[in-house]
Length: 228
Image 1 (cartoon, rainbow, N blue to C red):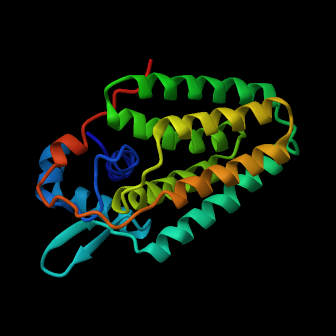
Image 2 (cartoon, rainbow, N blue to C red):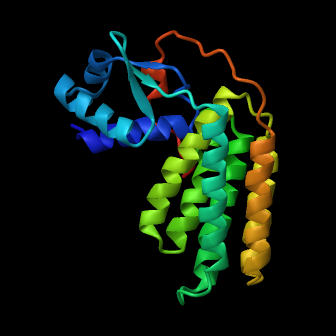
């Protein structure tokens, strides 16, 4: 039986996989039935998500996934640029062997390529977003990895809401170029490539999409088929 943090994590993962959409209703009883827990536990999880900026309470209507404004969207991308380029520029200062970092990131890119070749759009979206969390984790920054998971989930909501045209293959190619720069120990170039990558995702934003109000919780919160 999951606790409130595990329920919250499942919701964030579903946002990263673009299975939960901005403006989608999160019914307390629906979630309680889905996870086999009490509504009290669900409410605690939703309050945790509210504090992290992922859900909001609408008067007499219940809990909903947030719909970021365009200003909040640009703020989230700016935060990601600051964090991720900073991580890369300082990557050689912690004494962590970069070959181990490169090995893990290269495997991640291979998993992204496998997901892109497959038919599961949710796994593809999750893997592409998870690259940035994996980067922080592989560099040994647990706290920043958690921060990046939230920031990446925020920009995923933004990309969903504002109908991003950024191509999955382009993202994977840009990830591979970043890893190649790290492998050459050119961390300045890696940081510049990361800044350009995040910028290209931000520039691909279009207009706000109309969110389907139908209840899709069962499908949205199902487990992800991660590559083996």
